[in-house]
Image 1: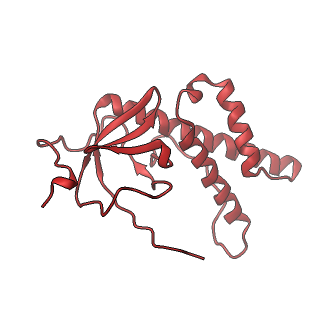
Image 2: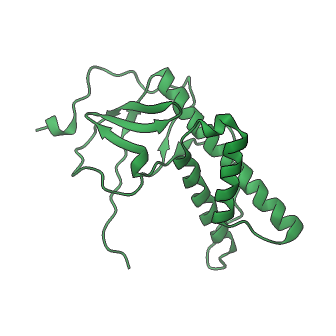
Length: 182
């Protein structure tokens, strides 16, 4: 049973080149995990007629992180979230009541996104802090509306980020924090 209402807000983020590179590492690692897990699931189904569940994919992720240093350098939370998304896609594919098609491989340069759970992000004053390789990135937020309260949800929805070189409009002065709005 649904206990409450979930409200989502969309805000524009302004990042510098270093932050963009850090976010791109997270996005590329997430795409790698999706494509590798999807390829593994496809091969198992094609050759052995068995499927790969979320627990199996999580064990595979642990193995991949031990083999690839660049993957281990990126926070694990967005990688775990992408496995949950893939598992949901696979289950929807097998559900006869759901018109979802077969999960597809992610292409480089397409829609880049990531999801962090509550321990992977936070508000530090007027900035959004997210876990990236080497620590946390403190991103400037364009506050278009007040947050009704501190975020209490378990996870955030996807943040999209354009590829480097396609920057957002440069900032025009300091961004006021919502608590300073009247």
